[in-house]
Amino acid sequence: MTILSPILAVAVAVAPAQVSPDITGAWEGRLSVGGQSIRIVFNVAADGATTMDSPDQGARGIPATSAVEGRTVRFTVSAINGRFEGLLAEDGRSLSGTLAQGGVSAPMQFQRGEIAAGPSRPQTPRPPFAYRSEDVAFDNPAAPGVRLAGTLTLPQGSGPFPAAVLVTGSGAQDRDETILDHKPFAVWADVLTRRGVAVLRYDDRGVAASTGSFLGSTVADFAGDARAAVDYLLTRQDIDHGRIGVIGHSEGGTIAPMLVQDGAPLAWIVTLAGPTVSGGAIIEEQAHLIRVASGATPEQDAALGDLQASLMRAVADNADDPAAVAREVEAILVAAGQPQAQAASTAAQMSSAYYRQMIAHDPSDSLRAVRVPMLALYGSKDLQVSADQNGPALRALKPDADIVVLPGLNHLLQPATTGLMAEYGQIETTLAPEAISTVVDWVAARSGL
Image 1 (cartoon, rainbow, N blue to C red):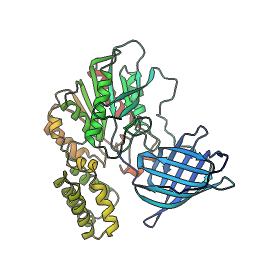
Image 2 (cartoon, rainbow, N blue to C red):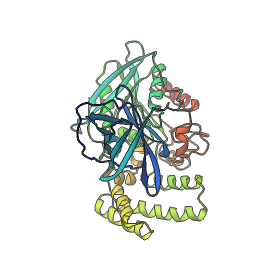
Image 3 (cartoon, helix red, strand yellow):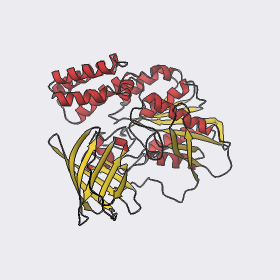
Image 4 (cartoon, rainbow, N blue to C red):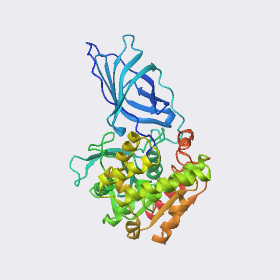
């Protein structure tokens, strides 16, 4: 699930100094985009750990790196292909340089301050833990150069233990599926391992400690990474090879049935807000629900809905032809009144391999192939993957699936008011207790616990 829209980044050369100064602190600047002023904050801890926030977009804690050469300071955010390079002022209180992303750049100044305390996230697990935790790494043999780094949590004892692989949603995600300071996969690993289930979670390719490139990868590539995670568990003697399941959130819920269809020896699967219709249908319904929740009139909703449907058809009908997608999308947007440059930029993004495959993918074949127990969990206030759209579709495809819709929960399975993404970071709860108990009890029962 992607929150942050493209921001920017590229470089400006500056003269090095002899001594590299301390840049610990919060560096805040304002970026002018489309007439709006958007705050960008880089947080550098005393140990060098660096994150980026975009508070006005509701995004916090995005993994980043920082480097200092003399008075030249660089911040890199691989998840959004972003970079800042600038010159530190003599007094050490400001940075002047260029912020860039994807070939677009803009001048930027940052002022130094103190790192603000993050929002309260009381469910994030804290040591000491009542289980073992092991850093692991494994290769995807189908993708040379992709080595996935993760964490395997194991109950006390010698095993062999039932196990779960956690598969993240869309966007560049770390092993905890960190978003807005929430760490839902760390919470899932904690509650499941305490119940007796070993849990493997891993950084997406090209994110944090995993190698390879996230950019340019497709859902099929990510499914290959998830299969590599399952195969890694099959090499371990402390894992019961007959009791391995997969829990996928959002796009990860699309990947879980793909693994079964591909022959992965899974005992069960759980989808959390998982799509069961095509990506194009998901996007159309998502856009409609967000417009309505944001106060659009019926006339505005209908007009924008027609435009969205035209764009989805242009992508789906030309899924194997990126040039045709770009050409048709740009023409549709220009006809709708978008400036040429903006239409061309949007068309380029929508013609990417990832986007074309995501929009055109129909999960019905993989869902029909599932012959193992399946739990599908939805929130009634999920505006991104609608329970009303996807629950009935799954029921028609797999009548024996356990489909649970929990009232009042959003796409992250938090208790919500509107379900809009702007609420995600404002809610202290990472996972609603009823969501946790539903999944953990179901998995424990299928694992013989």
